[in-house]
Image 1 (cartoon, rainbow, N blue to C red):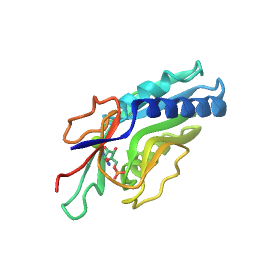
Image 2: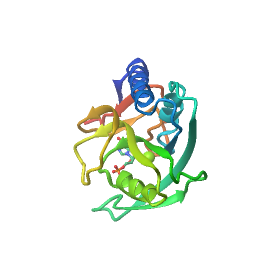
Image 3: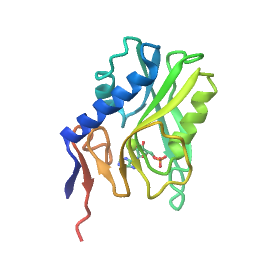
Image 4: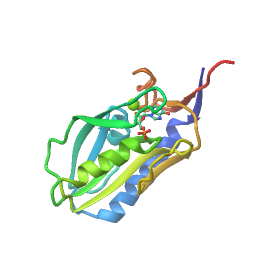
Length: 173
Ligand code: IMP
Ligand code: MG
């Protein structure tokens, strides 16, 4: 069963707030927003359309995480890397959800190797319960304690990404 946890209206309100903060921090300075595929595709699309900054570039990376059954997603590898140069640029990494933090930490270290001028992190959802590694989050949409969420880009086995709101999968007892 799916239970709505964040409505379409709440999401868009939060995104407008985040965009306003990003505009305030960078003014008209050029920025590059890097979305993580596939989960962040809708969030990034809505976020950039709310920015007033005229100097915005967009790129995507895609990662795959894998591991053993008792230590899931401990290893991360890039399956699609950057296509534009971020050297000397202001970069914001845009994530859909941070769970253990392993993916984000890996991506953060990876992007740092390209010597950006600055590197910040923006996530729509910060899911706290299973955090293993800490990463500095500069722009955060929502904090959620636990639960498996779908919709607004987030999937369960590739389903539900298209839903306009965020829902939790509730297992029937
Ligand atoms: P982390 O490395 O554990 O932080 O995992 C982050 C990735 O796991 C996200 O980018 C999502 O692809 C996936 N993920 C973690 N929690 C959820 C969830 O509640 N719903 C959908 N995907 C999730
Ligand atoms: Mg995913």
